[in-house]
Amino acid sequence: MSAQTVLFDAPGPKARVRHMIMTVVGGLVTVGILYLVISKLGEAGQWDAAKWTPFLTGAAWQAYLIPGLLGTLSASVISVVLAGIFGLVFGVGRLSQHRWVRIVCGIVVEFFRAVPVLLMMYFAFNIYSRNGVFLPSLNPLMAVVTALTLYNGSVIAELVRSGVHALPKGQAEAGLSIGLTRQQTLMSIQLPQALVAMLPALMGQLVVVIKDSALGFGITFMELLNQSKTLGSAYANVVPAYLVAAALFIVLNYAMTKLAGAVESRLRRRPVTAGPLTTTMPNIVQGSAEPGGPTDNLIEPYQAPAPKD
Image (cartoon, rainbow, N blue to C red; front, top):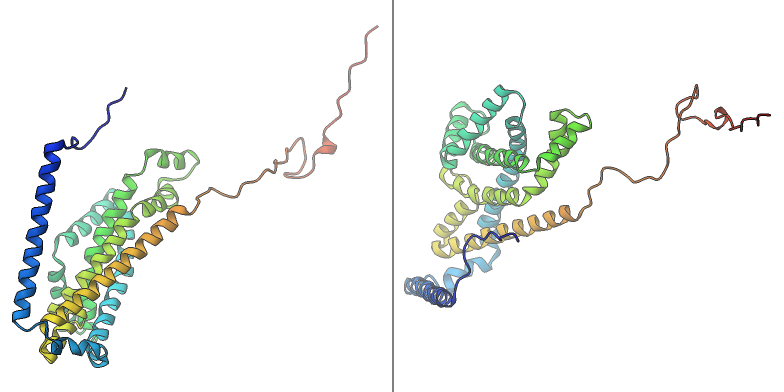
C-alpha cells in the first residue's frame, strides 16, 4: 500500500476553531480599516456629488480618460508583441546546443530581469531625447515600450526555457528516434507543447505589462494614471480621479484574465494528432516493378509439384 504524500496534516477540531477565529478577526480588522478610510474621505468632502459629476459628462472622458486609456493600451499591445518575440528568441537561445549562444542569451536575460523597469524607462528616455532617435512626441512611448519589452521579454524567455525543461524526456527521445535533429525536435515537438503548458503564466505576464505601463507616469507618458492626475488637477477631485483610474485598470486586467482562460481552454480542447488516419495499405514492390505501380502481373501463380511415380 503506497503512502499518500501531503503538504500538511489535516487540521483537527481545535485547529479548525482557531482558524475560524483568526478568519473572523481578520475580516473585522479589514472592515474596520475600510470604514476608517471611507469616513476620513467623507470628512474631507471626497464623496461630495460635485467631485463625481465630471465623470458623468463626456468632456472628462474625451479630454482625459479615453486618451489615457488609449495610451495604456497602445504601449501594452506593442510591448506584448515585442516581448513575445524577444522571449521566444532568447528562450530558444538559452536552449541552444552551442555553449557561447547559451552564455550570451543567459547574460542578456539575467541582466534585464534584474534591472528595475522604471530605471530602464528613465535610461531609454534620456537616450532617445538627447540623441533625437524619435520625434519628441514619441520619445515617452518608445521609452515605455523599450523598458517593458526588455523586462517582460526576459521573463518570457525564462518561461520558455523552464517550460521545455519541464516536459518529459520521452518527448525529446521520440523526436531523435525518428531521425530529427535536436534543434528540429525542440522547434517541432517540445516548444509547441511548452507554450501551451505555460500559457497561464504567459497571460499573467501580459497583465503585468498593463500594470507596469503606469510607470510611464515618471517620464511624462500620457497613459491612464498620468491623465487621471491631470483630470484631478483640472476638476479638483484627485481622489475620485485615482479611484476611477483604479477601476479601469481592474476592468482591463479582469478582461485579460478572462481572455487568457478562454484561450487556454480552447487550446486544451483542441485535439492534437500526428496526421490524418488512413486505412490504405501500401503497395508492395516486387521484382522490377515501378515504385507504387501494380504488381499483380509480376507475381507468378503457385503451381503444385507433379506427383512422383
